[in-house]
Length: 65
View 1 (cartoon, rainbow, N blue to C red):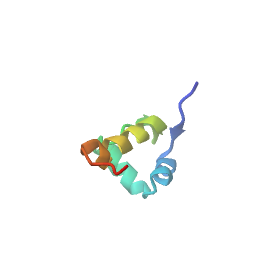
View 2 (spheres, rainbow, N blue to C red):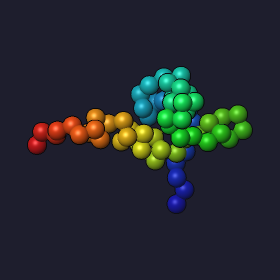
View 3 (tube, rainbow, N blue to C red):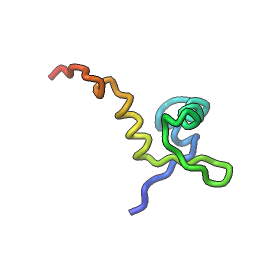
View 4 (tube, rainbow, N blue to C red):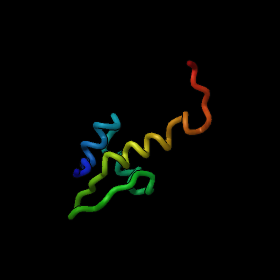
């Protein structure tokens, strides 16, 4: 099974942010990405890992049940 790869634009749409934000995350090494030619490619799983790592639930937030 092949993992889904996103372009910077697709990642930005998935995260609902602008492309510049995704590029900043990549440049700061906060979001893992691979350079393919002149373009970046981001694994969907790396985007999901980024979201999990930056979630307030990962910092001990209490979830109301």
